[in-house]
Length: 150
Ligand code: AMP
Image (cartoon, rainbow, N blue to C red):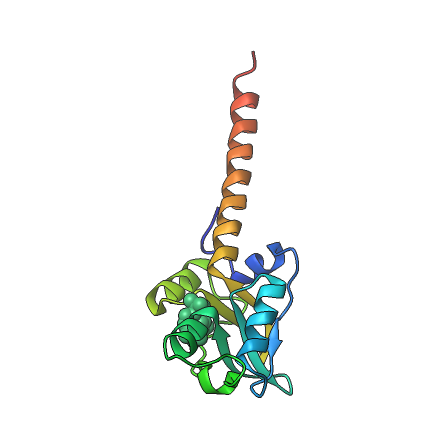
């Protein structure tokens, strides 16, 4: 397993590389409903294919629930994070992990020529590392069996 492989490899490993998004003018309730429907923790906030921000369950917890607001009364644009940190597909996996750890967030849009080409979560990276490790173990097992025939 090489953490110097590109993040594009992690995207390729995902069962579905879909970009789940929401409009800034939809309500937070609609955003949370969509996250629950697709089993994800964050959505890209997009308008005309342009990335305007990101909204995650953490934004909902901190900026809606904790403030005593009601999700149906608050728009996505009011609580989204606009300073989105993204990477290009050639960024090494270890650097992407470092970015997420340093900024304490779990989602990273992958962008190419100003277009979002995928989104990786910390969970996707962990899953990729585990599957790569399994591959290395199988290769080592084959090597050991091949080297020491009974
Ligand atoms: P998360 O850990 O992804 O649920 O997000 C924690 C906080 O960081 C939330 O306020 C998100 O809006 C924000 N956030 C998540 N991903 C990013 C990102 N790639 N760039 C900037 N902010 C982000």
